[in-house]
Amino acid sequence: PGAVYQETYNIETVRSILRTDRVYKMLYKGTPHILHLEFQTRLETGMATRLLEYHAYFCHKYALPVISIIVYPFKTTMVTTPFEEISNGEIILSFSFRNFPLWLLSAKQYMDDHVLAMYVLLPAMEGANARLLDQAIEEMVKYYRNDEIRLARDLRWMGIILRRTDRVTEEDKRMIQERLSMYDDL
Image (cartoon, rainbow, N blue to C red; front, side):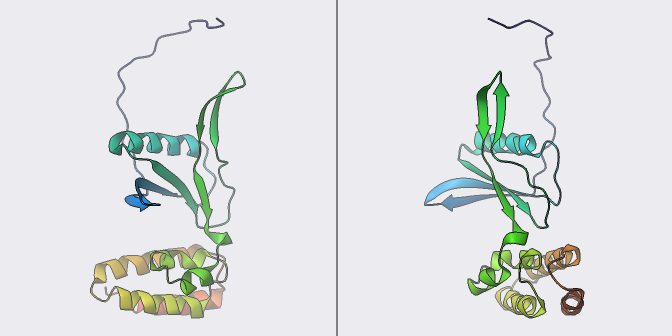
């Protein structure tokens, strides 16, 4: 009741290539999951539905629960979660994802906890400064001493985040950029 035919769509669909930022298999609270990370620097129209498309694809492909997270390195308007598809006041789909605003996180806390995987993102966090970033670089160099490719990649990403952030003073940026340039030959 209430439905009126309008047109028929082609039932054969060619899926476009999905390009995601990062996808990992992980254990979450002891259970296998897929972790999907998308990095966003600004509000993007359609972001929630694009994330839903990725989410459905990974859930279907791997038959595992998917945790979808949008990582925001810099202050911006974030997409509202959950995304809800509504038909005449009825929710027919609700998709929850997580927003991870780096600019609200404490760089010192990640250093104190030695969360090395987050060190490349430290320049975007509250409290990032030359001393803290220099210490992070030292720890990365020690940790990756047998993996120069990984070290080079991570230092390059740290430099990119550093250039774009407003959390670090220009003087501190200059000092850390000089330090990072010592590893340009990697």
